[in-house]
Structures are given as C-alpha cells and as structure tokens.
Image (cartoon, rainbow, N blue to C red; front, side):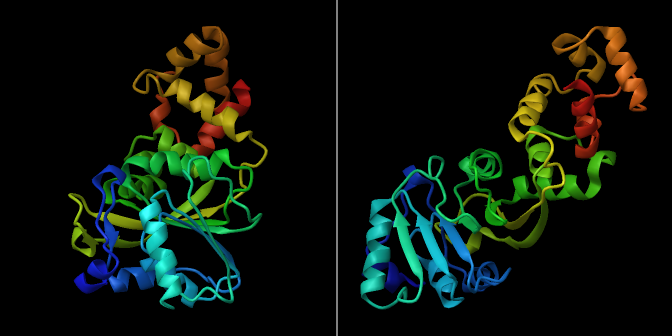
Length: 275
C-alpha cells in the first residue's frame, strides 16, 4: 500500500488504538500462506483497512469473519468492497464491530489470524486459549519480538536455561508454538519502536484431562512469589510441610527446587498430586 492509497481512503493511524499498519507485501503474503486457508473458517482480528484481508480472500476461505474496534477502518473496508478491491462474493464474509476480548467466535472450527497491538498480547492469548468455549485449531499472531522470543526459546530450551512463567506455562498447556518470520519495524506505518515476529500456535489436547482454568489458577497463585522455594510456597498455600516434602520426594524433586525451574509436564504432575 502506497501513500496514494492512504490518501484515497483518508487513513491515519490512531495512537489511542495503538495502530501500526503492516504494509510489507512480502510479510503479508507469508502470513496469508503459512497454512492452508482454502475452505477453512478464518477469524481475523484487527484487519484495519484490509491489507491482510485482501490476501486471505485470495486464498478462498469458506468464511472470513473480521473483528475490528475502529469504525473508521470498517468504513474503509466497506468502501474497498464497493470499489471491488476486496472480493467477498463467494465467501461467508462478516465484520463485527466489537471488543475482541468479549467476542465469541461463531464457527465451531476455525483458525485465528491477528496483527495485534502489543499491549494486549497476553489477554488475547488467554481469551482464545482458555476463555472461549470453542478454541481455534491454529492461531497465527504477529506480536512484539521480545515476547515471541521468550515463548519460542522457552519451548525449545525448556528448563535448562530459562525460567518458566505464567505466560510460558499456560501457552505450553494448550499449544505448540513455532516462529514463522521476524518482522522489522520498517514493515509498518508508522514504524513501531520495537521489532515484531509472527508466531504459529497449533493447539493440542495433550493435557485435556486437566481443567484449564483450575490449572491456570494453580500456577498464578504460585507465581505471586516465583523466586521462593516450591516447598515454602506449597506449605503456605496448601499442605503441611511433611506432606509437601513427601510429594516432592515422590516426584524426585530436591526440597530446594523452585517452581520457575519446572517444565509444563512437571507442573502437570505436581498439580495432579496437589489437586
């Protein structure tokens, strides 16, 4: 998209909505072709003026539902449809002017694609991994590179080099994650102050027998004091010291182990013992 396009539709980024428009055609193409779109139900979050939307429509999805908070951007998309720049005739195409953190996906099976403002990354992940009743099959999310790096590195390196966190654990509980591409600040207008990355989340049901929200509550309580010994935290919140020591011994943990040293499988095993 060039300056003439922005001028034609009077497009201006709103700081209040943390808008940074992705204009790099190569990155847009990579995002739209990361996985098979044809005949799938796609939920796109924050399409803005429809740069990625256009690429997704070209892939012939079964449905494409957009969630956009900015009414001005919705008007631009509707004008682009009228001008035949976005071809929606053969697609179940709908735009929802809603807060995505309250939006309930219509499709039972769908994939989510999002270029989201950085400040809302964790709430978005929580919403679609834990909060909605119909989780997506996949999520392709463009996010701040530093956050993406921590998610990817922790899944690769696990406990040997990095400390676990609520974010890394609740993601690992629900999905396998891989990095698709790094995105420089120059790919956006206006350019953000940080680099970005596109991450692919592929949901699994490895721990389906463990209640999602109870497990999340369990780790959140512990991570209020993450640097303390697991023994001290468990004694404070749950059991007598002797019982905690017995549990740690059964799981082959030293009594000095800290919760941030444990990988998701280990937290699941601990949760089963405690629950």
